[in-house]
Image 1 (spheres, rainbow, N blue to C red):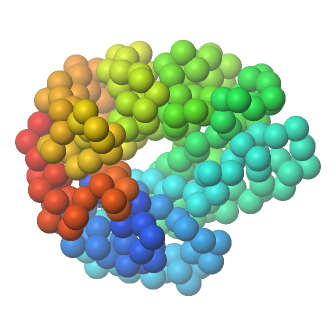
Image 2: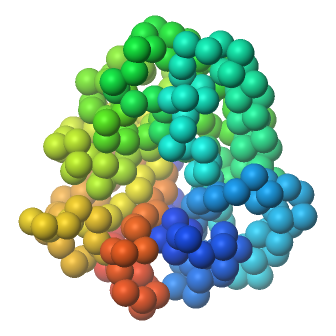
Length: 264
């Protein structure tokens, strides 16, 4: 694994939702971030001309796109992990467009929410289908990574461990601090057990009343966080991912980005 000096920090365009994605990318550039994740919001945004526009914004501002986030993530349990095998086959093919999109933008990761944990769909079937999709992504040089979304079937270290054991060496994950907080899990448990499987982080802060606020404005121990990443030789990237209601203006994001850079 590469050394921790290669880790870079950035900001997700999700912070500016529901701004049009191209405007969100431009605003992300205005924060000073050179690394980003693109949160897609509509089918037309996966088309060639739109991706050319995003690449122009990225290149003009000297940015790198680490990952992309599908707009269909909220429905993946229904689209991909239901008892309807035909629908899975159709949307398995559709997700190949996300992998193509990621490759076009120079991104390496597509983020997957997966199915909710109350589904009647069995774990073995989930793991089998996820394994097939991971291989589809790998054929295009892309990592399909499972996120620890609360109320979904990868929200805890135990569930992630089960998927890792079932899928094998190509299983990768995205860890989101606010999602770990909501699931009442320690993000440090994820880091200490899965340092080789974690390929990306979504960063946020929290306090006693709010679970998604700008880094540096809450009680999360970012010094311990980055020290733990370094101790585990983590060399991948991290992006700040907030909801638009979680901050007032762009300057707060710039301040938060500069804040976490003091620890990384």
